[in-house]
Image (cartoon, rainbow, N blue to C red; front, side, top):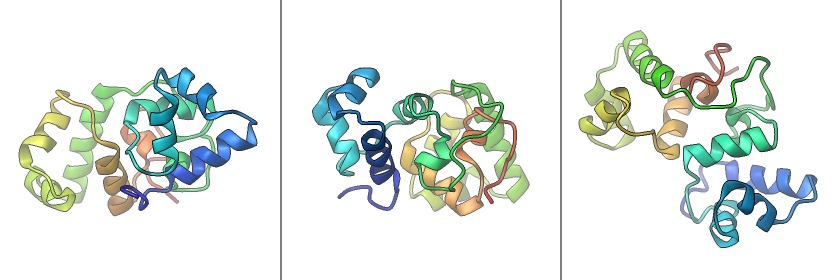
Length: 156
């Protein structure tokens, strides 16, 4: 169990089963194999942010809910797509607000300064595990950071 600290595996399984869906159906929606999707459900593989976004749209839930960050299933005025431009700005804004450097954030995430720089320059999409850690550490909404909502900014 590689990623059990994140709760999404149990949550996506419960959502799938409560909607009477087979793993194959959800996998086909995501454009992946049933085997890969099954690995998300048993926490053997980390689900990429884009698949997390697609599942949130599919099940009509917030990414915060899927990640187990809060119990709020859905936010009003939710955009269906991740907005990388907003993400870049909001990550920088969070660092400024919390008075942390790229180096300090990299240390918190156990990664390098260049990874944080790549996120803030839009060169790469954030890893789900880093997104989760940032949201837990700073009590900020994943949906907000990813540009899917404008409020609430912080988790309750």
